[in-house]
Image (cartoon, rainbow, N blue to C red; front, side):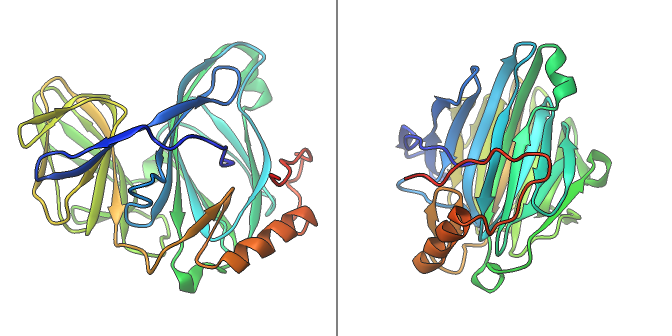
Length: 304
């Protein structure tokens, strides 16, 4: 998804010893009632592991005849990871890929040295009202891989491992968690998972990764005697024992990983360890050197 100008998340608040920071997003309407809530980057927390961008999309109900329309736009130096709870998005890119994504599936696009893509609602899906709800993340690439060859992979719901517990279910989308590993190709140690907790259940988040966080999709959770509301990003203290308690049930996205190998610059849809590389990407987009997205000619111009 193209990075839209948006205000920083509204506030942070220190938590108990287990929670380092609570990030509350500020939502923006991108048109037709399509709300996007940005959690990362934040002024006091630019990344969690390699996760440099985290947007919650919706939930939005599109009227018949309307839908998502993110025109072709470019990326470098990152991978995009799209995951839906409801609805469908049609992905097209400059490599020639055309792929719908539906709930529980994962679209993993490696931008590397440069790729362009669009994200729209399929024409058939616009014939009747439709809901859209999901998350899109950007995962910054290590320096050694920033110029890797661009690629795209779609992973079906059945291909993503599920870790079942007593009343809990964790779908591992990317990376490693609790002894399991996702089939998605990653470039640095990380984890990203969709956790559903039944009423009265608890879930431990192992300290196997240095940086960890949880986004509350639905429901409330308790940690070390403190209660947290939905639509917040909880950033955990390194090494802390984290046990999530869900008295009435909850759904969370768990994420994190090893800190990246140095700071990253982010400008529009470009992420890089080099300001000069971002300037070159700007010139490439102006000159049309990213390649065309087949069947989707209307592009987003470079911001002035």
